[in-house]
Length: 137
Image (cartoon, rainbow, N blue to C red; front, side, top):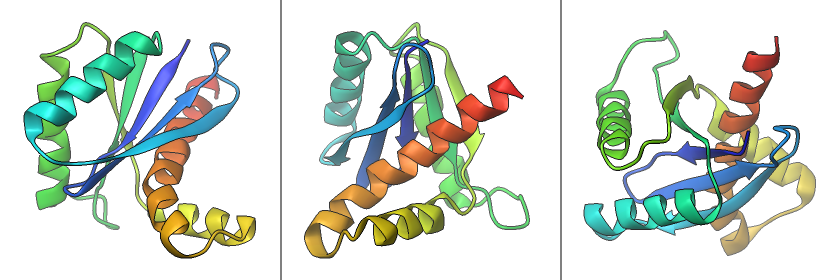
């Protein structure tokens, strides 16, 4: 199943996709947010163009596992996306995904502006990878 991982943010939204077998996860791109409608238009276009069958939105819970303002914003985002597509939308706990993404980019030797742009899509890779692994176990 081809799935799209989303690292939701108020300024940038990181995207990742997996291959049809659900084995390899790759960063797709980072969207710089302008307007809400432009974001959803771009996402629905990607869902169609990439033949996406499931979307996984990272849920930024607190370290204690509780909802925060950002958690509620991510839930609202997922609900809004659900109204715009027939593809199932899943939420995945993303605690520490950004820290893990930082470590992976450090190991890859990425620095500066390239690193900043890659961080959100790499976090989306981790969110999608975690969801796929959870489904296999």
